Length: 156
Image (tube, rainbow, N blue to C red):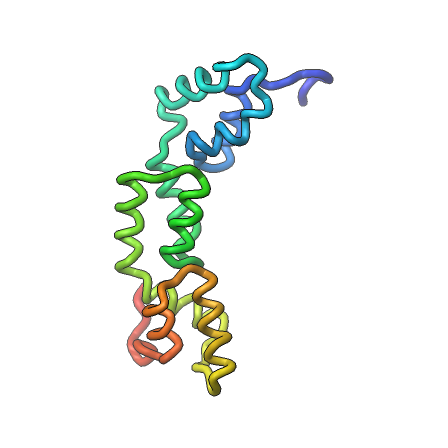
């Protein structure tokens, strides 16, 4: 329990956030900036945490990809990574790896929601919109809704 009037330090607030899930440095800066009382204090605290590997953008990329890849396509994951201030080599590598599984992931998401192929153009458009809003590429969406690969054994 916190004492009345107790305010955790910036480092304490950052550690609390990091204990819940991985955060990028940019994300922590955005969340903690309103609590900074002395200019430069936040940067110093984040530098210390980064030096001790509490903040690791590579881990933040991996964490987001692992949490979201089962439900979202590469484009949507790339958008979420950018919103968290993540870019660079780790992001490019993660997105490249996702491209290999894009079709099977889209198929699994579609199958969970619909299971049967669309019977008319209106239903087909609905299925396509569903997958497109989740960030799957147009080519992958077209193949899934057309039924490519449905007769094959699902890959685990």
